[in-house]
Amino acid sequence: MAENLYDVAYKLEEALRESEEYKTLKKLYDEVENDESAKRMFENFRDIQLKLQQKQMNGEEITQEEVEQAQKSVQLVQQHEKIAKLMESEQRMSMAIQDLNKIIMKPLEELYGSIQN
Image (cartoon, rainbow, N blue to C red; front, side, top):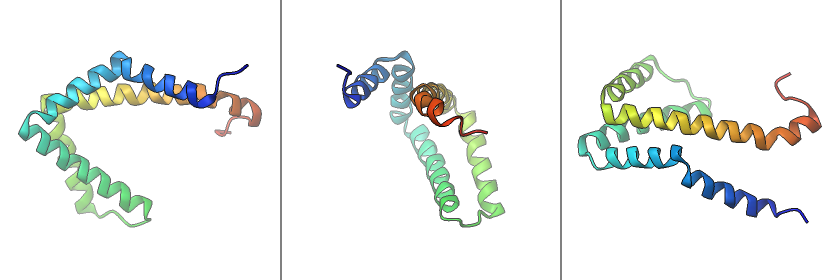
């Protein structure tokens, strides 16, 4: 008998939590959280990101001033060693999740064909 899909999903969650990618991400996140200036800088960066994403989702226009503010924020956080390492780790974790998503979606792609046609 096939395993319940939700049981498999919870096993995947556990495997993600035990992966080196996640452990590294958590360690770096904790380092940023425990450094008050890094934490403030990172929170400001995330706030700017979320506001711009929300505006995009609502179909609102993003002003040149907002774009420039976002670019300055990115440059600032990239210069902070702890935040830069955290962002690199986030990128690696995101790539792993994208790879997992491709694997999970493979049966539907085979059934319906690639959506990217």
